[in-house]
Image (tube, rainbow, N blue to C red):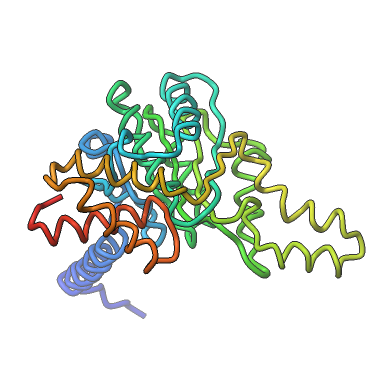
Length: 295
């Protein structure tokens, strides 16, 4: 029985249709998951945010930060973090750092300001922020950073873990415990309101319900041991609070006498119920707005 030869024109049409569909699918995937920036793109910025959903680094044109000289009342913490960051930027051994303590006390501001100060002498020092909810993607990010010649200050703000959250185990392994460990060109800085990154009631619950209480608690709190540098932050006293405002008034040339802004600053802390760097900055924003002065 003789077979009918295939129609060559129909075959070509089918191939063209399939190719067109595959091309449109590929274009759609590219739009959903943009490729990571090339090295030339990384050279155009020294700060990025890790986008875990698309596994790429998004450049930040202008980092939201203040000059390190404006951070008052944290001289010891500033000196230690700057020294650690300078060593790392110079290619010397440096520690992961945990900045813990009162909310609004300048933890994240110090990390961003330290990066800016050190990057002036070490332009390849790059700040990369990873969000708390994206910690499980940390191994993918580190693999990306390991392959580049730049040095990265990896920053996670407000890091903490609750309940049955197992992401802390991934972070433990990545920081020090894994076979590869963290890359030599990466250091990890985190801020938290909790010294051990866990709520106290969670730790106490482990202690009271576990068969071996000491081992259960050790498992929960050992994450913070992966940070070689611990820096504690506390609420500011009134003199330090005034020093913060005084520095801002001078830096932004607000042109108001201290005798005028001081009673207003006291009233501001009463309404907020605390004194901190964040409260001082909020007062300065209100003061500058009322004076018609830009910041």
